[in-house]
Image (cartoon, rainbow, N blue to C red; front, side):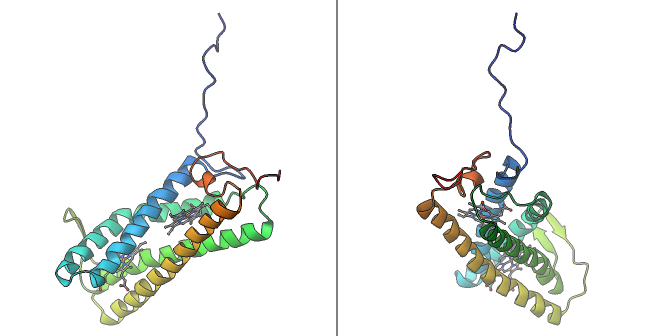
Length: 199
Ligand code: HEM
Ligand code: HEM
């Protein structure tokens, strides 16, 4: 009886390789992308939506942000530790620019994660997570600190919007004008072909 008669076992690629993203990066990218877009929308709705819904929107924004805090933090550390796979055929210069753009996005996300809680606590409030959990303020209330946190949070949100729009535009450009796997490799591990015709 042959011992290995079944179909070959499929290997699940969890970690990144030199040229491809693994499942850990792919899942973290899309979960956090959805959460960040939702946080941005709920954050803006605090002031731009109907005034009677403002408190509910603030509560939803803070609860979701506090629940997602660790995931967003963890995905940023994950990227810093696991490096940046380079698309096969991509020039070193373009790879460096893409890498820098991603790191700037993560830096701005970090500013949002720091200034958000500071904004709540410096106003003398606790962070309430869907009414189930309350994280009390470790700080004493300070209007100057609140203004500073607001300045950082509000301006970082606009910078993040611009960066994410550029990021999506860049991804669409690859999809429409370059026949490479830049988007495909952020959807399925192991996709790393160069522009058609390149090795
Ligand atoms: C990636 C994470 C985050 C994003 C994208 C985000 C986005 C936003 C946006 C767009 C606004 C409205 C700003 C404006 O109208 O100028 C806002 C407001 C606000 N954010 Fe965030 N935020 C994030 C994280 C957090 C966190 C972690 C907290 C606290 C736990 C927080 C607490 C608040 C509060 C309290 C306001 C309203 C401030 C007020 O009512 O005066 N945010 N956020
Ligand atoms: C529809 C929306 C989005 C699309 C189509 C998209 C697409 C992509 C693609 C194709 C890559 C791989 C680029 C490469 O191979 O060099 C990537 C990487 C990345 N994206 Fe997005 N993205 C989206 C939303 C977002 C959002 C909202 C954020 C953060 C606020 C984000 C942050 C990043 C970061 C930091 C990377 C570097 C790899 C990583 O750490 O995951 N993306 N994205």
